[in-house]
Image 1 (cartoon, rainbow, N blue to C red):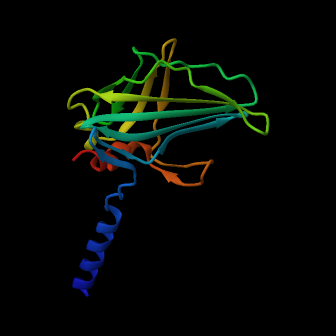
Image 2: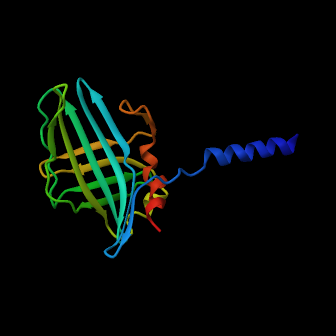
Length: 189
């Protein structure tokens, strides 16, 4: 009986702490080099009074250079103010261990794309690439991210990370604090 209980306990722990499978979106190797990226992952969702903001991350490795691809989608019945990214824009990630990781914008200057949906809602889609400074991602492998600050060209916005949430968009469960712990291994060889 003790052996059976011990075996069940071991299997339960393996199930609980099992690593998430890598979900690769793109994996290309050609004469120009290699490019690999993960599928998009929702790390932030806010919906209040007819206004919604969703932020997605994906990780990419372009010839060995690690990038964070950021996509922000805002929707509202009202006008949506543009938050622009330029060469001085940065993302700051505060880790559970107290360290702060800085990512630098390498994408083109952009204020996003404004779209009007069929139901009359205004939408703004903003996408850009950020690069990690040398070896700054090592702490991300072992420590949760609790907070993100995005420095736009005109202002700075803060986004607290939740331990877990169920998205209103796709009804899936997300754990944004663990994003880098779970998915860096998919990109870094």
